[in-house]
Structures are given as structure tokens and as C-alpha cells.
Length: 439
Image 1 (cartoon, rainbow, N blue to C red):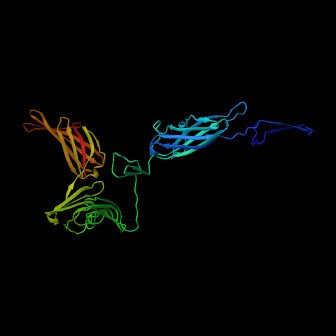
Image 2 (cartoon, rainbow, N blue to C red):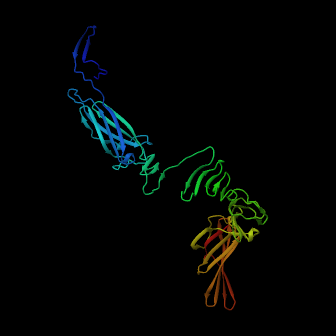
Image 3 (spheres, rainbow, N blue to C red):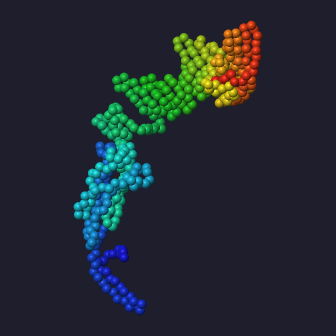
């Protein structure tokens, strides 16, 4: 039987029979005023003034240290566990027993170097942890949880130097070290971070100008922006010279151009450009003898578009004619070659030109190049001296259809030294090694 809330040392027992007769007996019992174990304080302190990996754990409390008769109460377990603050649950594998010092009804653990996520080396300084202490006696269990903060200081002072958001790193040096984002704001005037040399008074700032739009690098000596942006463009060396733009180029008329320094990227819009011409990169510059410009862009559909270019010199008055730059794509590559059907990795219709490289069984190289090659036929021909008086030409005819190059027929022509010829059909002596697409 378990008796709850006992508050007297006198115990009275009643007995009642079936007729309702009853009697009672009272006895004095040995009454023990037991109190549950109590944890008074727990502390966990990082080494190196709170920024180190090693952690010293201390705790103390009280318990009821008297006898129940046959049993004397005592502390049966002291342990701790830990987890990262961002983790929901403790891992039972991290629980570690501690040895407490007991004096009368007091227990304590003082400055115990505990293991953490770094094992014997302690706790990672960049993280914060929860540490929970558990103490048990023979009748009760109590826990006490604390937070071990990260070892990253808000401000660290080293001699006459300061670090913010980190320990001061002596290998980096400098008066001020900042780890992490910084923020400053102002609703009026310039909002700038400035750097200044006291020996020359040269000062430069970066931030946002008083208008709340211009932002970049500003020279106090020159009293102008060096590099800055507004809501649409990026500028170099003052507000009048545009570096990057999404709009049209100024002063464009026909095939003439008034040049100015800079780089522009914009859509084509002038009649002087080829049809279907877009995504121009315009490079402009000038020197003591005049100016020069280079336009690059693609022409045509996304599948077959090629790069076009033109340039000008002579004080920005005359454009060169348009040139074209093709890019290559390997559609079929097999150095051993095949004398049968070839399957391309992409349709021939996507390319302005197709180049076909091959060889004959006797080692002669063959080659042809086709413009708008899709649905066209072509021949590969190789010739060699088959005998002292016989020259042999081997020729194969092919058809291109989308991603397929199929051989239609193959034959040979033998020409003797006296001019006679002999023609015969064959099918396995001409091979295709490589097919290259240009667009």
C-alpha cells in the first residue's frame, strides 16, 4: 500500500464486520519528513573568456540524506546531455555520467571539463547548445537545462584593436575587423562608408547618394561618382558616360555613328543591321587618333543563328561590311568510321553548313561541305593507284534527311594507262568519320 500526503506520525486502522460492528487501533509510526532532490544552480562557461571550445560545467543542490529504516537515501545518478540549440531533441548517446561530491545533504560538481560535439576538445565556438543536467536520488529525479552560447563575441578587444562579430585575428591585423553584414541608414543626405588617408586627404566612399537613387563609389577629391548606378544603368567616370545600357544607342543614323567610350548591350533597331539581328554587344573606345567600335550579335533563328560583326574606324564615320562567325557542333564523331547509315545528334536543318569527313578502305581521305544541307544529296570520292597501270576512283552517294545520312549506292571506276575504263558497283569501301555542323 502507498500512502500519499501523510502529515502525521499517528496511524489509525479500522476493521468492520458484516453486522456493522467495528473497532479501531491507533499506533505511532516513525514519520520521515522526506523532501525531493533539488538542483540549486548549473553553470557552463567557455574557456578563453567565453570564446573557447573547452567548457567547464558546475552544479550544486541538496537532497534528503536520512534513513528510511532499512534504506538510507542517497544520490544515485548525476549526468548531463547536450544538443545544438537548433535541434529539437536530445540524443541519448550524448548522455554522460558525472561524479558528484557529497557532504551532508549537499551535492556538487565543480569545474568539470565536459565533452561536446568536438568530443574531448569541447564545443564548436560558432554554435550555441542546450545542456541539461539530471540528478536522481532513490525516490525522485530532477533536471535543470541551460543554454551555452556560441563562442563568437559581439565585440572583442585586443590591445588597441577591435573585432566585431568574431575573435580578433592577429594574422589579419588592422585596427578594425568585422565579421558579417553591416548596416547603416539615413533618410536624408548621403549614406556613405568612407575611407581616408590622413597624409594626402584622399577620401573615397561607397553608398547611396542624397537623392536615394545613385549608388556606387564616390571620390571626395574629384567630387564626383567614379562608378555608380541608377535604376536603369551603370555609369563610369561621371554621370554623362554610360557603361552598360538596356536602351538604344544615341546618335545612330544609317551607317554613320558618333562614337563615345563605353560598352552597351541592347536589342538591334537600326535599318543598317541584318534581318533578325539581336542581342548586340557594342564595344566603343577612342584614342588620340580617333575612335573605334565593334558590334557583335546573332542573326537568324535560335537554332541556326550565327554571330555577325562589323567595325569602324576613321573618327567614327565609316562602318566596315558585315562579317560572320560560325560556331561548330560535332554531330557525329567516330574515328573508325562507318560504311552504313549515320545518325546525327541534331537535325541538319538547324545548321547553315554541314562538313562531312571520311575515308576509303584503302586509306584515302574524303571531304565535302554543304550549304543548307538538309534533304540534299552529296558524294564522297577517293582515288588511288591500284596497280602500276590502273587508277581506281571509289565514290559513294548519300542523302541527308534530318538526323539521318543514308548511303544510296557506291561504285568504283578503274582507269588504265591506255585510257580504257571499267565501272563496277560495290557497297562497303567508303566510310564516314565525322560530321560537323556550323551555325
